[in-house]
Length: 379
Image 1 (cartoon, rainbow, N blue to C red):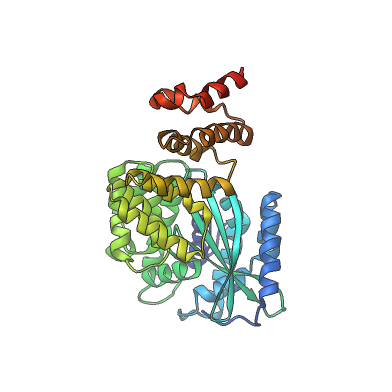
Image 2: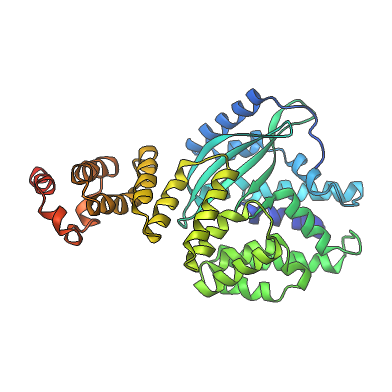
């Protein structure tokens, strides 16, 4: 029989979904943060996600941060921490990250007011992009671990999302029989189950049943946004508009705004959002692909070519950027470089470029000695 309080149940469910301050007990050095980042990076690339969670994620610290502004009894806090640990054991935060990403790369150590965090970039199975910023802490035992997580897709720290959701659910106190909390628990469970089953219309329907207060919570706005992407462009745009209206000044929102501006065909706005995201993460060459695509829409082909050149120099196995880059080179009369890139494309990705690049769109290039020589060499 399940005797856990709604508080503990909510803690567990929140962790399952997000898979997406108190002061630390000791000061972390740059070297310690770098060592932790390298260790997590190597474990992720080896597929040992569970070890990251069990060895380097401090659930007690996360719970402490999430409840720092809440008046919980000792038993309620213990129940909350227990719910978090059960949630991790049931599905796992990092296991969910693994399921939702195709790449997970260590970018850098970030420092803010003497505190360090570890920034990772992830390419998503859905084709999107996300950044994970892990707060590094030193606990009472002197262990250097992850104590919190900021994701650009959720636009906040996990601890803040959990804390604000609890405050919204229990405005009159924190009793185990609190009806507001029970309703929130039920909504989260229903929406999470529907999301995991691919029933995205159900997620949106459940969101529409929420109280006005809960509709403004980042967690629910995030659940709606994720589901809306799989329903329709109209639903997705509406979800983004509401998210932006609720939290217009959140730094991480810039990543989400790239999509919004693209859908609105506001390419100057999209470029501004890319540049802001690049600044926030401390610089990421991966974003040059976004810039290159935006510049083509703005008919600034020289900048598009330069951006894609920088991108492919760092990500030569990324097949998506080659068709646009080769097209730009062919259109700009850079035939030797276009042919060189066709060869590099095939060697780096194993693809046959002729299945993706149509030389008929560039008659002069097609008839050039460089391209004809390339075709002869391929036979």
